[in-house]
Image (tube, rainbow, N blue to C red; front, side):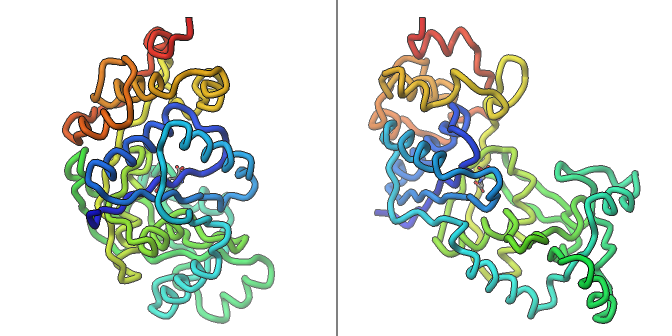
Length: 315
Ligand code: GLU
């Protein structure tokens, strides 16, 4: 065993599709090729959208493909006390503050030239410097969210696949939420706390999270934890240019499993989407041997219907 520790951290908000199972496969291959450990973590903080049924389904999907995991999976909905402790640490350092703004207020206050990050308008810092009296006054009508004071300046890092990336978090996103006003930890805080708690050394995930990474690096720094290395893979798109995640049906793994398809066919297709094969069936063992980061595509992969039908033998 090496010191390599990777993870797959799905949000159980629906059935797994070929796009997110590809991220799981690549993370698993990277870990196994490095003779490291691979962990599973259930990111179910969004209680309204997550269902226990989807957790069962995704574990069954992973096992069906042979993607095993080491150690007991962390389940984020059971870790509120850990996230609260991290928030207290940040509070002691003066790095967070309560924010009473509604979404509508933030949208109105955001001045147009500052543009939009993909999470909406930059937070203009409305509540950043309230006095204690003002905070107490506001708290009477609305429970606050908590925001992290983004450090100004570029946060550069080198992605293992995409190369150098940088973002000035303060300028683009502004102070960002670490605890929502319903008391639940935000995605950014939970990911950082959990990656640190499980000593993750390598994060492999979809490139829709590339722009979250500078925020996560700032949180690691603030909490004094060692940040992992990052590798972001371009997503798989449908022929219509939409993310697979937004589509349903034949792309759901459970459905392919229930149709009695051999897992090697699915692995063969996923390998073709990853520069590791020609679409013909593959075993996990063969894929571990042939895995290489250099082979991974650096631009979005298009899932062509014809290729899918051919590779999966759905005709
Ligand atoms: N739970 C996130 C998702 O399913 C992934 C988080 C991560 O890999 O950092 O999109």
